[in-house]
Image (cartoon, rainbow, N blue to C red; front, top):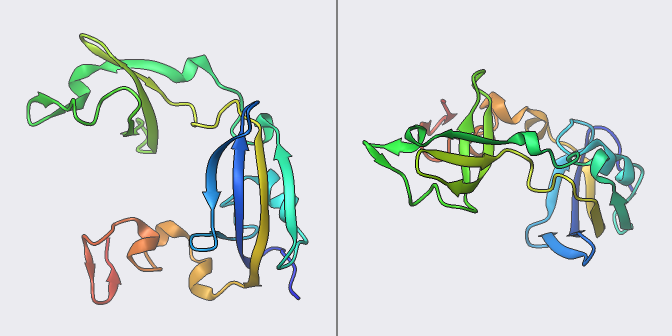
Length: 182
């Protein structure tokens, strides 16, 4: 039986619990398991460290402290931006830009970021750029359900557009019969 190590395709199921009440924050099920290539940096390093060496059928129950997960919650990651940045066709996009919604943003270097809308004010929008799990200790309870050698197409970086439309994020647009041409 193969064990989890660099270059292996891994599938696992789990419940992710957070907070003092151990609220279930996320589930990976047999119908929709978490899948990744071990060692490519797709997952939190501490998560991979805990799974290293496991085999199909191995169960796990571990905690990753916030400092080894998404870091502490940082008040400096809450900022206000001018409301006019959220105009669509001359009108403020109040359907998308509402408290609690996550909105896609881009920084000056062109990096994509997600922000949670905290409050819509008269002239500004207050946004929280902290990861939703910042400041949380993560408690994973689950099982490894598949370990195998990764196929060549699975080893391609998601941004390369070499793995078809699902790997480059262009969806149905820009994709022809030959695969993605973004």
